[in-house]
Length: 63
Image (cartoon, rainbow, N blue to C red; front, side):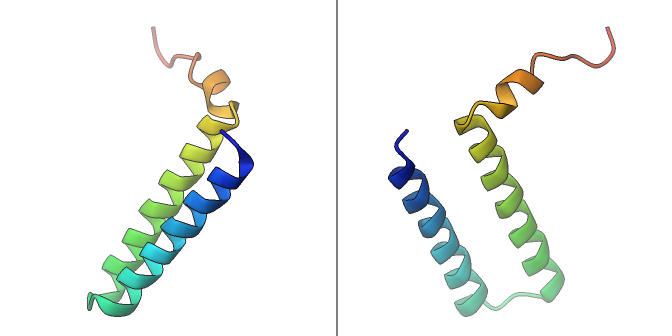
């Protein structure tokens, strides 16, 4: 995936998150949880894109 596509996706996600935070009224704790979930999902997506998560996923816990 070209770098410009990654930057565009990050910008769009940031804009959508800003719009939700700005114009949809919700409690502060819910807003914080929503922001955290979106940021964690974006970080996991970036790790998969750059191939850093694929090497971690081959390890298994337990048997």
